[in-house]
Image (cartoon, rainbow, N blue to C red; front, side):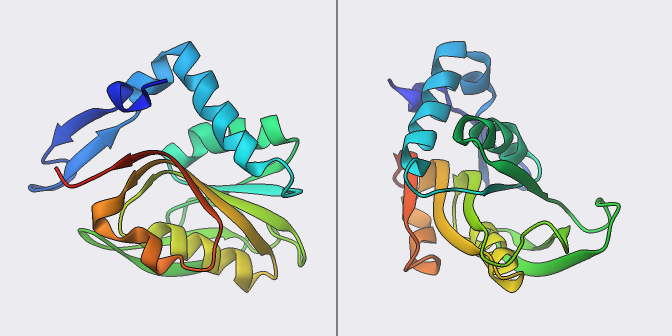
Length: 173
């Protein structure tokens, strides 16, 4: 299935010079949505995933669905101040600045097998931050699953040593 055809470019969002990859058309297409979740779940099968960790906000959409499909739990990673319980946090670099993510301090139990999910792998900063949070709490990152990989930004380099899967790889625009 041609998932790339269901990803829309939005120029200059969230800042001038950035081309945002909008997965909304993919999510609106029932067949494409099912295919995307099934392909990422196939990557997770055999990894004995306990938890899928997805970051705010698009990582929630497919992350929770992926967790359900794998028979795993779901943990949301959120922007600071959004979670109601005690949290652990990490700061990371974006291609256009810095940001932070938090998860509840009891979200990942020591020894938990965690599949990290996001809609997009760009520079690897967000994914690396999620891996750091998992490992800080004693969990094991068993894989990373992305819908889109912007391979020209070199995100894989920040994630060496992790098993990774991307549905759509995009080269320089």
